[in-house]
Length: 321
Ligand code: GLV
Ligand code: GLV
Image 1: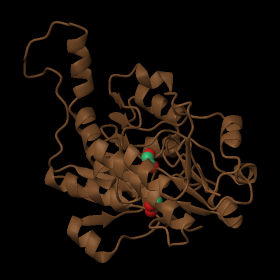
Image 2: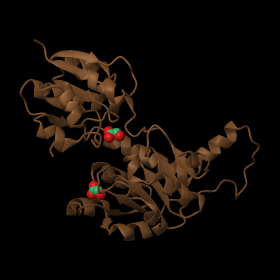
Image 3: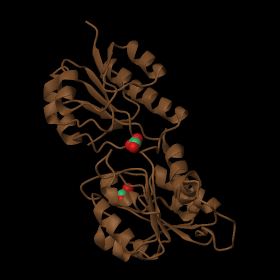
Image 4: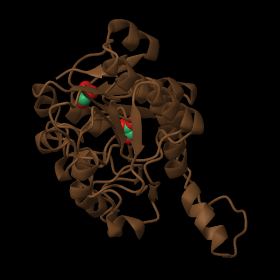
């Protein structure tokens, strides 16, 4: 009997082709995030699940799938939606999609950085509102980047790619994280390791590139925001809950920091309403990896992870607990 592969939400055809060679592929027809009961129903009898970052995969879901389940392949680098110890503890392999989305996400972080420091969203809103304007020296002036310090939280692959781009803009790079980067990485990026509190106090821009874990949930809270310079900008392309969104809205309202640019939100797809009323906030809907090339590569990598496990081979990008 063919192995059952459940894809929770539609993926590019090239990935489906890879999957069809190793099993019977079922793509959930809803084309929206499934509710928990819908997800439990959909995965029943699955040997493999191709999951999206909004699908909660835990012990209950593995039990609902059944004992034949072999692999959960997340189409995302972040896997905070998966209870990895619970899933792997039941003998199920977990895989994610690192590497293929590094450049796209770093590009987006720099796009947000430019948008918020140069007030591009604000300028666009002005024109779209058909408001009158004329050029003058004080009109909609922003903040230059040259000579400023970018503070990176989490100097992994994406953090490093952002650092490299920021260096091309003439910024200097500091970083913090669980551990020091390799000496060659520090040397290449001329990146200074700082304790988190010092990084927050000294950076002109703080950009978040850590995974969401119990340690990083609300890493940027009221105290962290209070430590930042009143002119500093916060960029978040990691996961929404790394930032306490209500505390951020309050800090922005009170002028504690200069602005924020967010690709991810604490309660996606909701956005804290207070943020939407602030001109110095840029918001985009979780677009970090959203290029045709990258999304295709992510789906194909997830499919290759499934194909490897179902044929008894080593998956290319397994998550180990
Ligand atoms: C997207 O947010 C990802 O984790 O790949
Ligand atoms: C998190 O802070 C990391 O080091 O990636």
